Amino acid sequence: AQKVTQAQTEISVVEKEDVTLDCVYETRDTTYYLFWYKQPPSGELVFLIRRNSFDEQNEISGRYSWNFQKSTSSFNFTITASQVVDSAVYFCALSEAQGGSEKLVFGKGTKLTVNP
Amino acid sequence: DGGITQSPKYLFRKEGQNVTLSCEQNLNHDAMYWYRQDPGQGLRLIYYSQIVNDFQKGDIAEGYSVSREKKESFPLTVTSAQKNPTAFYLCASSQTAARDTQYFGPGTRLTVL
Image (cartoon, rainbow over all chains, first blue to last red; front, side, top):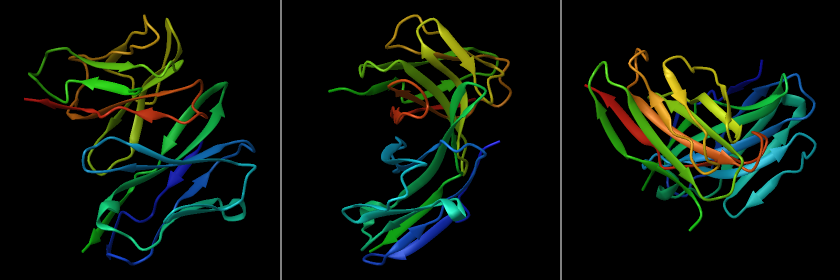
């Protein structure tokens, strides 16, 4: 069975600090997809990134960057120079095929608070 | 604007009553999903549908029912059989399968009085 672990339940930083959110996954499949979503206080999940298992290149998008390492089954997310607007719950998720049907499994999320 | 709408935003229900949550998308996506979120928890899959007139149970389907009569609509009924229905419900859609990016609606917060 697939599993996603976000060991950090809550993180609190001061504005302009860099912060890394950890995500460790378990899967037996060689083909799978990893996602990060942001859930601000309003509740709607906002898509941030999708990465397939064959693409281990790190990605940068503005202040956001992602480090995918298959050797350690990790897909960590770093926010550089954090801002108050980054305060949210962040979810890591894994998709793989199980018995012909595909499901997305979420970690329990990391609540990030950025203080001014 | 393309997107997913859910209504109502807040819903209150008395014990023993069924209630239906609406989810509509105009993204022309084939697949739609319902998730439940409890405080401090991740999302758990209730039901999903990959095509019109077909749907499958997710991990926590007991006490819920769905229909998929139209491509753009995937309503969820929370029945009186659901023992602990108070939660935040999120609807999502994707182009085809779960490997595609899922886009989420704003959610419905259900409270049982």
